[in-house]
Image (cartoon, rainbow, N blue to C red; front, side, top):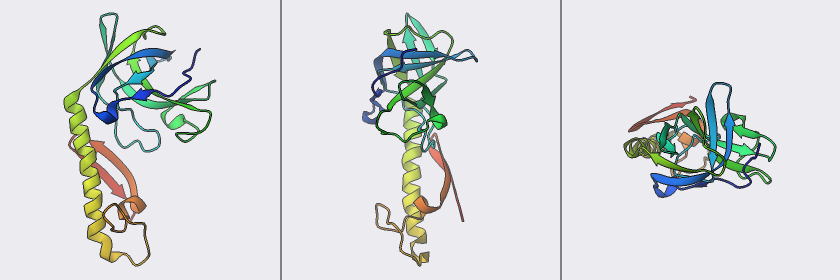
Amino acid sequence: MTLPSRDTLVSYPSGALSGTGTTLHVDLRPDGRAVVVLDATPCHPVDSGWPDQGPDRATLEWDGAVHPLLDCVIGATDGIHLYLGADIPVRKGTEGWVFVVAHIIDGTPPRLGQAVAVTVDADYRTAMSLGHTGCHIASLALNRAVAERWTKEAMPDALGSPNFDALAIDTSTILPNGSIDTFRL
């Protein structure tokens, strides 16, 4: 099994909604799903460190067939094993590790070296982006609302209020056009 020797080039931060990548690795799973690692992708994956935002909805296309993306997660390899999501044993950027985007599909994967067209659902990406931005705005508002209740020195947020959100957040789930956050109180 050949594992990638370099990180996946991601273009979602620049707003890319389509692109073509070359298949670097495929892994058939017992459940009939396949893990496909491309050298480049516009897909936003679930982050293993803070999995608050789910993956993009997208399709992968090769040989004239369109394959819906079932999941998209961060993966990492030490050159021997490919670890996905919460199973990754190291932090991003760890020396000697390669970090990739793993596209999960049903059925037969593309061949190694094959070009794969990736198309992201623009409306869903926008809705998730709005939810994510709203989550950050709400955290700043919450921090400001409880700022006078602090009696101890606390790290400030981007607007200078004590960062209650960062200190007390337990879970965050980004939704289309919103989010649900829970806090330890």
